[in-house]
Length: 318
Image 1 (cartoon, rainbow, N blue to C red):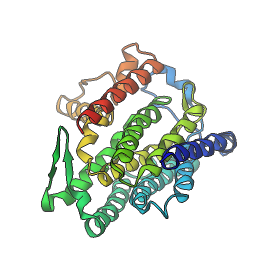
Image 2: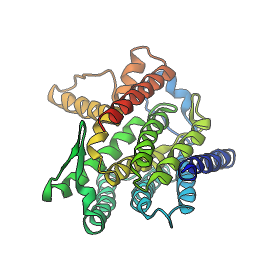
Image 3: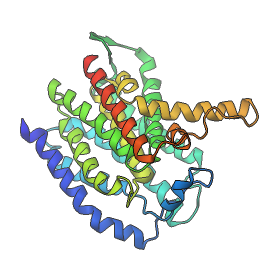
Image 4: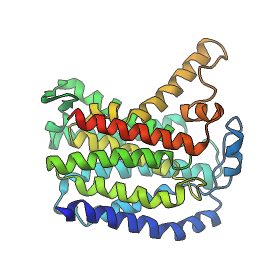
């Protein structure tokens, strides 16, 4: 049993930790530095030039580790596909922004089109190979499975793309997306091991990869994950949830992702309706707390603690 959860954590952690001292100087030489928002907290101005695209470390650690287990655990393949697929979209976006120096990166319609294609392939796999994974477990009602019928297809698109973009919005402070997603990945690992689902190598690999990445991403960060990492992590969360029949549980354990994306939607909608007024001082909501006087490390700590508590609620809901 230990081989299926201890070793993937250790292998992935070592790969991620060893890659850091080599990849970060390489990214710095390529001048793939982060550009912070002019309207953001003034404390973020010192982050200008910090290497981004560090999500490559996470992706390499997870993929390499998973290759050791994929033969005996084929159910990790769709999760790897979604993780790597969205990671590649993020990489292309980062590359255009920081290497080709086109600040907008992929156009919104291009990014959405690519996300729809990746999600569509994942949905087709579920429908054709394992349609039972389109059924959904309901929190606090463990003996019932929700069958949406034909509506389960658009539901996959809504859950996957919503989760991916929620994770992307969460990546705005040093160590925030990493810390929150470690909690979520640990929750999924516990469930995967407890239910014998056959996906625990990849969930544990993500835990290890993020721990290794956090060595370089905690405040003050020496590297950011960029869209390469944040989109990949969103794909991982959504893919894992579906392979465990637990997409509804994302609302609980991924509560921070949900709050982040809702804060942006509320801010934009209210701004347009009121012709310039705002609900929050800044969105996503982690920046609102910063502008209210919270330190960056305090926001990360509080959001991580909240996620840990939500994961406990998720376990109770099983």
